[in-house]
Amino acid sequence: MYERGPASRRWVAFPRCLWSGQCRAPGLAGPSVPPVGAAGMEVRLVGWVESGRAWGERAADWAYLIEPYARGVNDALFDRTGVGPGTQLLDIACGSGYAASVAARRGARVSGLDASEALLAIARARTPAGDFRVGDMFALPFDDDSFDVATSFNGIWKGCEGALVEARRVVRPGGVVGITFWGAPKRLGLMPFFAALVELSPADHVSATVNQGDTGRPGVAEQMLKDAGLEFVDRGAAQVINELPDLDMTIRALAAAGPSWPAIQNVGYDKFADVMREAIRPLYVDGIGVRIVSEFGWIVGKVPAAGR
Ligand SMILES: C[S@@+](CC[C@H](N)C(=O)[O-])C[C@H]1O[C@@H](n2cnc3c(N)ncnc32)[C@H](O)[C@@H]1O
Image (tube, rainbow, N blue to C red):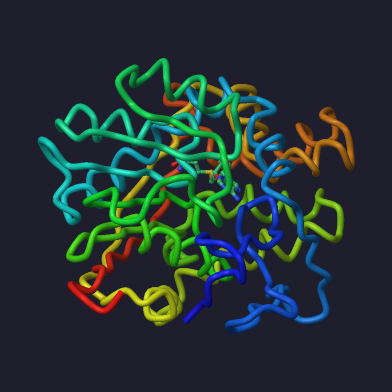
């Protein structure tokens, strides 16, 4: 279990990578979560402000060309967490608020938190009645027991257990927390994108991209729940589909993911586009366009009824 920071009600925030993934707690109370780079790789740890800047660099492209692809897993997780009329929901690392808009259409009262103000501006346009705040998921700006449900769609990875502890704090006893992550590698249609990203990224960003996939391995997410003091409820998988009309639009869409930003800075947009085009070309079918089918895993944990 994590400990609270010495002089604060909030949990101590640690530096992390652009996926919002790895974090560490040097010299602090509670377990030290090492920067979990693959063997021999250096992990670059960045703050949430830099992370938000990377994710917000091409905010409209992310919002409209990518984010809706996760609809299948948005519905799967909202079904399993019981999101419906009157649910007080917090979506953590909510991006441009597509998932929050799905929940709002179910009748939920939605709040969202993200590191990128540019993405949040779109979230507010999508759900004007929502309460969207910029900030760090390791220090949520919400009171204890404020929500029935907290979710995070590919925002909380292995190494981010501190953010799960925060989710648990803001959800009432008996409420639930659900997160998603990449599913089985053999069902990850986006693998060519990730492989190309690794090739193009500065060395100190590579291991974060490699490691966030680790969250889906059997037992990893269950351990994350346990470490955060959540009781395991259920785990499953759902399909997500990127659908784009041609290769140019696909490259533009993939360039909007936060971790593409350091790769583009590293090699320039033209080289990024050339390498991505070759990586994605096999997925293009004349007359149909690009359809990339991937699997997300999801897991749900319950906040214990008492003994917080
Ligand atoms: C993979 S995107 C997921 C966005 C959205 N949940 C979705 O389903 O498309 C990760 C998001 O995490 C946000 N993020 C990264 N680090 C964060 C942090 N420390 N606190 C809050 N948000 C963070 C980014 O700005 C980005 O919107």
